Image (cartoon, rainbow over the protein chains, first blue to last red):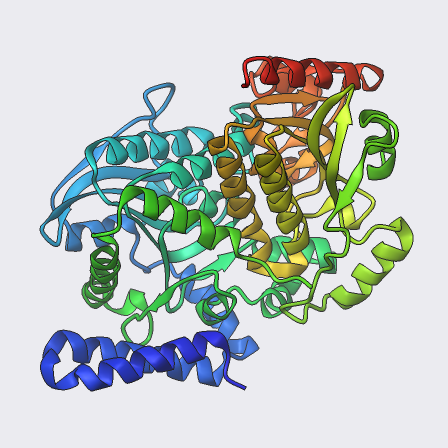
Length: 310
Length: 228
């Protein structure tokens, strides 16, 4: 039986097919994208494919936030610091021109070499990082800039100082702030969407996921260590909790899947950026004319509807 | 402390009326670790006599009308899945509709892994519910008991207008064992406990159990005194 997600995609596909004569390149690109999504959903990923997503999401050559920013933004100005205590390098914020508009961007940032990886704390933000993100969100709201967030974090940092600086409360307050913003928010999970660290910047009007990204409540290793009492059973854990984009779409957790170049985003950063840019642009266009109150109301209603129970 | 006992210790006798008691978890992922999720759920219900890890309802505390949302650690470690998220969300709506404050009492190991990504989504879900409650003009009084960790700490529990903890309660996003295993850091004494959280500015007060009812009642009176 087709799932709801599949039915929705079929409907959009039919509508776009009918528009084809008028459309030109943009519509046919869209059609191709939807067709690929539909094919993936119909096939349903196997356990092996799910694990492949985990590997690709963590691939060392996968594009990170700044790789996309450099390809998609003009006049990018990176901002620094939480205006309180620190400048957390595991998360970047800034302003730039995207598709003719000024947008505010927050993104988790991993490092390429060992020096940068350490400097970026392997992409794991401290509470100061979330406060830095919140500072940007307030700026975006004040000046009516749409907010883009790119999520790529293995998980919140499990350290003593992170706890002492109030990690749990900061993640909660970052979400609460997003629930109050009157500007459009578009999120894309571009690698690892790890747990509380990810949701801190992902309470968005449109939540997208790249084809090979993962979105998890706990890392496969962490889940395996708790439920199987053996971190080596990560593959089994991943197969059980299904962190891949197709399953997230089916569960209504994300609104769309962003295609990657064949073989994965790491094989061609330019193509990956182009595909991501098209999806972000499309999402922003859809939200452009929605009033601040409606944005807030619909955003909250969307998240409040998530869950399965009897 | 179990949820029913907690309610009996806070609500005035005979005033508590439970809501949404019939909500039950489903198994959206057909989750199976060493045992099926459905089996764990059935066992938890048998063991605790509760349908889920949270009980919600209306009542009065020292004569002050409020809504209560109380967690029970004995039900699968007080983990938050779809039903806990939905119950909390309904408690916010109940409070908003009746124009009364919400008092939450948390005891939780975090998100319920067996519901995968949907359990993570209960964080933004409960956060949005608190925002709607706040827009209605009503406060959330958050009482954190041992342990309040991970997903529950990183969502509604930390959004209390006033946050009160019980002495010695572990209040941490990541617990001491995982911090120690992952980072090999030397843990300070009392790491993550209520007393440390008070010192670092994350909570407002530590209140021993026998004084909790009167403390919460005092807060409820303060929040209602300027209302029409």
